Amino acid sequence: MEFMHWTKSLSVGIAEIDDQHKKMIGMINTFHDHQKTDSIKAMKELLGSMASYTVYHFNTEEAYFDKFNYPHTDAHKKEHEKFIAEVYSVQARLEGGTLLLALELTGFLKKWLTDHIMGSDKKYAPFLVSKGVK
Image 1 (cartoon, helix red, strand yellow):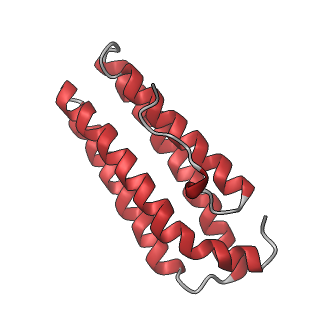
Image 2 (cartoon, rainbow, N blue to C red):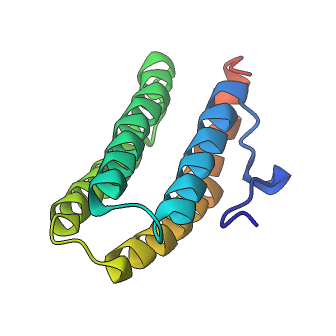
């Protein structure tokens, strides 16, 4: 059973962004599935891959913001920066490695991604769609 599910309610109506969100959900599910059986080294590698992909995703969103002069770019970028800083902090804490941290992390990632999509991302979607982004 999946830890986090993609639902139509998470769609922002922009295929590229939705596909990236789906991949991020898949990565969270992989992390969740492997947290009980994999070594700390493997967990660090999974978290590193998730962090790298998240930066890639944020860069995609921010490129659209810059291209179309999204009026709330600064606030949205600050959310991205705060999240990346938190992920890097967690990566550093994972060096000590505990299952509890891994369990905390999957819950944090699920909540943050859901809240971010349903809040901030849903706010920019109509703006970008109005500019022809599909």
